[in-house]
Image 1 (cartoon, helix red, strand yellow):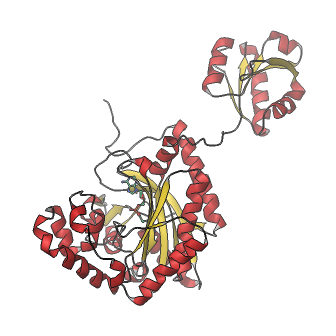
Image 2 (cartoon, rainbow, N blue to C red; image 1 turned 90 degrees about the horizontal axis):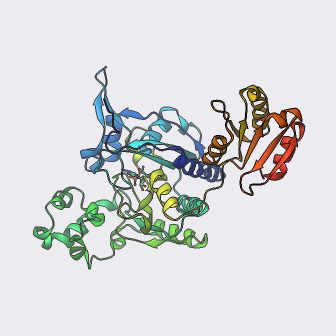
Image 3 (cartoon, rainbow, N blue to C red; image 1 turned 120 degrees about the horizontal axis):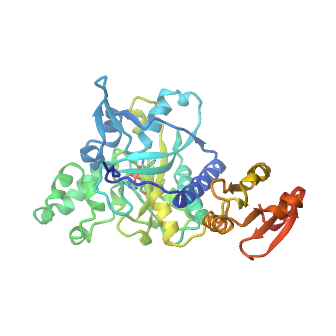
Length: 420
Ligand code: HAM
């Protein structure tokens, strides 16, 4: 019997995992510099939570959730995103007891039943942040600035930050009415699948990937004029802070996001080097979400980025990630010397090196090939002459030179030869 991977999932093999660890470590370092703390929530939650938070009209709820009944008859869904679970956890654990902000970050797998393609999977991974109980426009700007700090530290090139505002809850009907009014005369020409959006969620027409919609949207007036004065002031201040922090961004009225919980600022980080799935990160402000699921009236802002897309971009752009630990391979040339090899390996590992031994085969040319495969910097050879001299031969695999080194001086020698 042959088992295959479920469609839309992938194995992440050791060579690629190095990139994942690099991204995770840098992200966690940056997030902590901004005083965010990690939270881990379950991979599944009640289906109702997502229905309520993400919105019945979103594609995620209508067709992309992995939902099932558990053996106790409960309606459960695999999490399609991290904001709803974090908001739920914030309320259920009473994190709102303390006054002031709560800054959380998370990482882990998410699940959406989408049509798989490069950069789009059914199980994918996000890292994200949620800054809860903050209403000042500086919070929006600071969250966006942190995403820029992160992606530039990773070394990503050609990325753009696109920002927009969707206004407050009260602005929303006015905004939607303006879009409908503008498109009404062309309604019969709009592609069939946009008719439902026109009726129920007209804002979503703006980010439709359907090329034919471009023509009908040209000439759309600046929608910021429909917003309340306080929403306009909020957005202008966000842009002012971003300018003052020297963060490059573009105002992009087509960014409206696929999730319905956003209010005020929304943003995406995109890269043209990624092809069709160009969005590496998305986020924005969500002032009503926590109140809508039974919490206090606390505004919040956050973002999440897709690990797969960031790793793809690092590889695509040929960005080198720092080397892992220096690796030393040990080649005992006789089964009698295995114990000597084991002792040396133990000392090396305690001294901070990564190390491997050929236990199954004592053959120098085989061991040198193995050393190459493991990207070892040096190979330690233990043969008759070495044992008689209480020493080992250390071969530098880059320069191909070798020296006989006393057993007591191995670590000192390797420390000098390598930078740990
Ligand atoms: P989102 O835009 O749905 O936002 O997802 C964020 C990122 O996850 C995307 O920019 C993309 O990189 C990645 N992503 C989404 N779907 C897939 C997929 N099927 N395959 C691969 N990568 C994918 C959210 O999830 C919000 N919760 C973000 C947020 C946090 N807003 C406020 N706080």
